[in-house]
Each structure stands twice: as structure tokens, then as C-alpha cells.
Length: 637
Image (cartoon, rainbow, N blue to C red; front, side):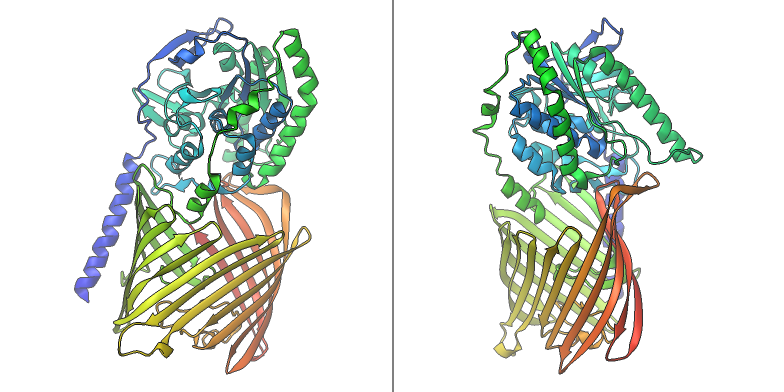
């Protein structure tokens, strides 16, 4: 046992060393960013611009209409609505230039992504979910390689010079103190510099340049569009306003100062170089409000529509015709976003870089042998790591401080486009007993369901394993389920010794704020089984709810209040909504037991991209005639 513990300790030490080495070495490096650049001086301002060489910007034989997409975090998603309105009105868009979040929209749109697909993409939570936390936070808090890789994967064209629409991205070079314009290279390499905010997102470093977000100097890249040869510039804005008017705290004072300088500098450039400006009043919203993407798009669309008569008037004055053929650029693009969304949902993306990231869980138990639909409350910190590259996905998970628990999962992604090979290993030293298990599964994936089959040996007993999940939607009804069946395959056990777990969850929307949520768990496992059932019963007799041959149900009525403007704490933690719920729980084992209760839950986000929840409930057990209370924290990074 001592030898095994030392092995586990060695594994944990190696994991931590990998974290440190990876974080110290990590820097957003543009792999093929060795393009020569021209040094251009603005005649109007005497500023210098470093512009990557590109023949496409030299050999333009027509008047160019440019759209300069401003930044602003989630607020800058108004740009999607603006582009949608311009496209509907056949306004020609020959060039898109973006900075900060505007650069992300510019890349996706300029690459040839249909506006409908772009709208679908940003109104899901996929884009912010692709950001990872760095650990330790040496270079930056956030690791952005995942989201940059994702943007390149879903874009019809992968390199800026191949885009059907001329596209440029604005960064700022700290080494030379100049604005830097990206016009060539891979999306995953070039887009980073435009939204690199020191501390939060990593600075891009290559060829002696150190590139960051240019927002303080030119949040809306109007002057950049003119430098690139635009004859007419349509600019967009999504300026920030702080949700307070006192600045006695350092972080408030510093943020206020940055916002004042940012708006002052950008507005001066817009006033001087923009022909039409589409201002979107989003100051009351947070840069973290990605969950309000639909509202931002609707606002941008509305404000752009107001400006259409003026835009058409200027086009007519400059003798620039409307572009009724513009939409045909996208007709033959097959993005297969459904397949990509499915791969993200089931963590099947095959990264072209080595992705090493920490795992930290607290509040809910995570196990590779147990189901994911319902997770039990746990006050034990779990931690580990993920190693991913290409088709390989390795996960290690341990807990506590004695290193007597280890779970490992290896997944080979892409045996076929919808089939993976998954190996699992569990080791646990519990009191004087050693509990172990391992297995091998083939798993088939569909956007709405999965099916798995394989073999497992658990505590020296052999099983055939069959399992599956489903996730279905009908209007306001969402139905999820998960089932596992372990059938003995050794001669010492009977078929009657089959063990099963089935869990089901339904969410029925009732109006705008209410939802009815029935839950069901049926199982013949007990708490000592490696693949034991989850406990959804919240009464006092939870130990009885861990026995075999059990049926558990829960009926929950949930009221969710969503704040019109999300609340911010310390400029990085966001409170989006608060839920108040009433529930009735039952379990049946020989006889039925009941519990009723009420609880509150708060949904929070770190930087708008990493969700976690905090809450608590009180419950009255009708059988035991006693009260019980519990606080809960679900932290999953």
C-alpha cells in the first residue's frame, strides 16, 4: 500500500509540474506570423501603422465600402445585428476591420460564414465556453488557444488572405508603440493580438513584436479602414458605462480612467474618419453579458436600420451601387455546424496543439464510472488534469490530501466520425479495503443521444457494459436521460445479478420565469458499487436512499429571476440570475419516504465565461419529522 501511495504522489507531483511548465512556457505565439510589413504614416495624424504586406489591398480597382467593427466584450455582439441589417439592405461590404471583440466578429463574417450561422453561433454559450483558465496565472488568467482554434475550425476560410471579403484586424505593438494591422495568416494565429488584454488574455509575441488589444487608442478601427484604402467607412460603437458613480476604490478608479481615455480617443477618430456611425447604447450592460447575445443583436439590427436611408444617400452621392449579389458569396459553404456543436458538447474536438489544463471540482462529486446527469453533493475537493492533442484525450482525477484515490480516462477520438474508444481506470484505498475497476467502451455520438457498449472488471468481477444518454427538446420541454446496465460475464455470477442505473430529468417551461422539473432515478445498486446511483433525495434518511432496489423521484417548481443588467463584483464575477425553488422528494425502498423543502440558487460567472453556482435549501423530512439545511457550491473548472 505504501508503494502504491508513493506512485500516486508521484503522479500528482508530475501533474503539477506539467501545469507550471506549461503555464510558464505558454504565450500566444503566432505560428506562421513571419510576414513582412509595410510602415505607413498617416498624413492626417502622423501616426505610424505596421501593415502586413498583402497584394489584395494593393490591387483594388473599385470604390471600397468598409465596416469598422468596434469592441466592447459581449456588448460588441451588436455588430452581428448591424451586419445582418446591412446585408438585408444590399449595402456593399467590401472590407471589414475589427478590433477587440469586433475582430472576432470580423473574422467569422469575413471568412464567408453566413450571417444566419454567425447569429446561431454567438447566441449559444459555445464561444465563451471555449476559453480555459490558466493555472498558475503567470502569463494570463485565461488560456485563449481553444477559442482561437475553434474560430478557425468553424470558419469556411482558414486564412485571412483567402477570405471572400477583405478583412483586417487591428492590434497595438508594445515594442514599437505603433498600431499593427493583420491582413494575412491563420485565424488562430492572427486574431489573438486584437483582443489580448494584459492579465486577462495573453500577449502575442513574435519577431520582436508584442501585440495587445488596441481598444484604449482605437476601439473602433475607423482610421485603420481609411489607411487601408476605404472610400466610405461605416463605424460601429458599443461604449461602456460603469454601473456606479463613486470611484474611491482602486479598481473602480482605474477602470473609470481607462474607459474615459478609451472613449475620448476612439470618439475623436470616429468623428474625423467615419462617414456613418451606428451608435448602440449598451453602456448599462456588462462586457461579460454573453447570455444576452440575442438582445445585443436585436439592438444592433434596430440601430443599423435607422441609418439605412443615410447610408444609401451617401452611396448614391459617391456613385457606389448596391450589391444585390453579396449574399451569393455564402451559398456554397457547407459549415456542418451541427457536427461541430456535437463535438463540443461531447468534448470531441481534436486540437492541433497540446492542451494541458487543470481540473478543479468542489461541491459536486465527479467520477468517470458514475453518471453525469445528477451529481451528489460533496465537500471534498477533487483535482486533476486534462491532456489533449489530436485524437488523444487523457484525464486524471484525484481528491483529498492522502493520494489514496485515482481515476483515469483515456479517449481515442475519431475511430469514425461518430465513434470513440474509451478506457477507464479507478483505484481507491478505502479503510483496509482496496477498490479497483477498469473498462473499455466503444461510444457512438449523435447530437441528441449516445450509445456505448463494452466490458469492465470491477473488484475482480467481469461485466458487459451497455449505456446511453439522450437530450431531446420539444418547444419549452427538455428531456434528458442516462442509463447504464452491467451484465455479469463470469461463470461465478448469474444474469439475475445484473446491475442498472437509470436517471431522467425533464424541464417544462411555464411562462417566462417558471419551470417544472421532475426527476427520476431507478436503480438496484448501492453506495459501495463503483457505478452506484446518484442520490436526489434531500431528506434526512439519505443513507437509506443509498440502498439497492430503489426508486427516487423529485418534483421541483423553479422561479428564475434574471436581472435586466447583470450584477458585477470585483470587475470579474458576474451574477446573472437568482432561482427560488420548492420541491417534494420521495424514495421508495420497501416503503415510501417523503421530504418537502425550499431553496435558493445563484448562477454566477467568472469573467462571463466560467459558470459556477452557490445556494442552499431547507427540507422537512415527513418520516423523521425533522428539519435539515444545506449550503451548496458547485465549482467546476
